[in-house]
Length: 346
Ligand code: NAD
Ligand code: LMR
Picture 1 (spheres, rainbow, N blue to C red):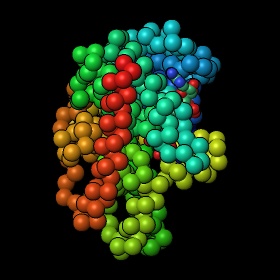
Picture 2 (cartoon, rainbow, N blue to C red; picture 1 turned 90 degrees about the vertical axis):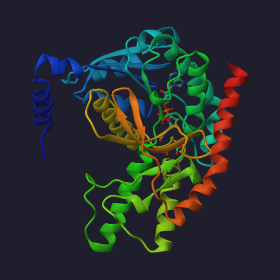
Picture 3 (cartoon, rainbow, N blue to C red; picture 1 turned 90 degrees about the horizontal axis):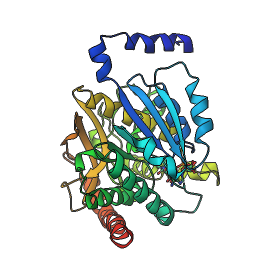
């Protein structure tokens, strides 16, 4: 295993390229909600990301401390903290990518939709500031309920005349991360050998709550097969994995560390694509014509302008078609709720 100092050397080595390629790697990223359970480890991972030159951290509390702490790490990104609403717009200046984990998490017994009343207004107001200051930024929304907060952000950007569906993402990477992990674990139990997780990829489509989370196990790479009952059990575990963490944390919040990992992976892939690297694909909850739901997660090909191509859901098994049918009413309801909120309050 590489020691931390060796890792830093590797990171430094990646910078010692020509000035042209270095300037292409100057990504400026803002994290909104940066002092929270997700925000802090996410900011740490982004601080270690060589593609990022500037990391602006915004929250309504504690950002000076978080920023001071991270700024001592000997990696490239220049970290600045911004505190309170009066500093929000300053934080967003020049941001190419804005990642939003601001908002309250679930406690046991709650659904993600139960967070709507608090988090809808937070996402609306943060997006309004994005429309003012960095309307061309990529907007990556973590805040739940994602099924509704992405429509909320999109409606705000539309009303401000700066909406580009290629640039607004609901971050659903954690569903893929979990699917990959759980599938590999089962294979390890079955055969004594797990899958190579660096090469395992199970697309997850739909939305990000309960039955709207639809893992496409039939499209996993490398291919895996499960008896019907086991596949149903695995699907249910993936759909309820957020609740599994909420219950284990017993009132102290929801997934933070795995979410930070997932969001950092998503952000890194997005920046690589913005820098012109080809073939960068992630699942994300985006504006979509794939189904009757206006927003729907599928694998998307990322490029210099955001979404280059929606890769769609591919061919589904009958079992997956039944999951899709079951998901649709809830997903559509969640989307309409977000849109109505903006229509009424913005
Ligand atoms: P947390 O309470 O630990 O942190 C939230 C942070 O947001 C806090 O620091 C708080 O001060 C800040 N905040 C509140 N209002 C704000 C505002 N108006 N502007 C800026 N910052 C504000 O919560 P957490 O565990 O980090 O979770 C954050 C959100 O992410 C929750 O809504 C949670 O449900 C969601 N989440 C989503 C996924 C996903 O897969 N998309 C996974 C895990 C959690
Ligand atoms: C998750 O999937 O872990 C998040 O959406 C948080 C939650 O409330 O479950």
